[in-house]
Each structure stands twice: as structure tokens, then as C-alpha cells.
Image (cartoon, rainbow, N blue to C red; front, side, top):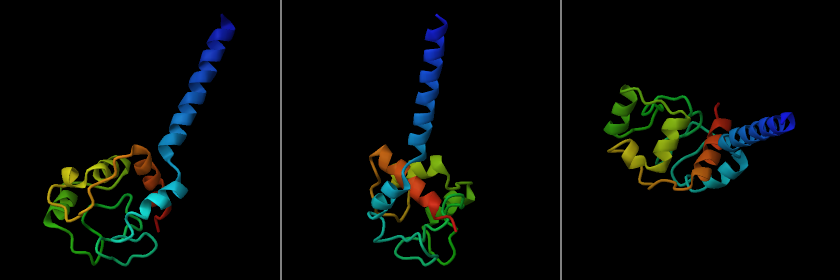
Length: 128
């Protein structure tokens, strides 16, 4: 009986660690996902393209990157308290126009949760 409890405990710990690792994502795979974004965004400089630079986007208030003309909807979302963190960015990447109605972003969104998780890992690498 004691061994069964120990085995269950170890199994739960291993599963929890694997799940946490899965949620952190793979930044290398995220770089490949980001290739879909490169027509409009960069992460390696503060220069804006058709879309704003995503360098340091995590933790940034929505609609505030210097020198980029955001849609009124994105500016308002930022003023209302939208800050790009894992949850808000995940929602936005899944369905941009549903998260911020009136956004200028033409991209329809990513449907694969693993792609979003990996992309978030990649964006977090490019913080400065």
C-alpha cells in the first residue's frame, strides 16, 4: 500500500513537471511560427513595419509602442488596462479581432495552442 501511494505521488509529480514544461513552450519552434508574422513584425529591433515591433512586447501596455500608429481600438484597449501577458497574448493570437474589436491586424489568428505556446516562448526571449 505504501509503495502504491509513493508510486502515485511520483507519477503526479512527473506529470505536473511535464505539463509545466509544455506550457513554457519551445522558443526554437516559436521562431518557426514567427515566420508567419515577419511580413508585418520584427522582434530584433524597435523599428516598426506594417505592424509594430514586437521586441519587448510581453509586459507592454497595448497600443503604446513608440512611433506606431495603432488603431483607436488598440489604444483604447491599452487605456482600459490591456497589458500583454501570457493570457492576453494567447487570446489575441488565437482570435485578434475577437480580443480587440477594431484592431488593424489582418491576421486571422493561430488555431494550434502549441504554436501559440511556442510563439510566446520566442517572444519572451526577445525582451530587450
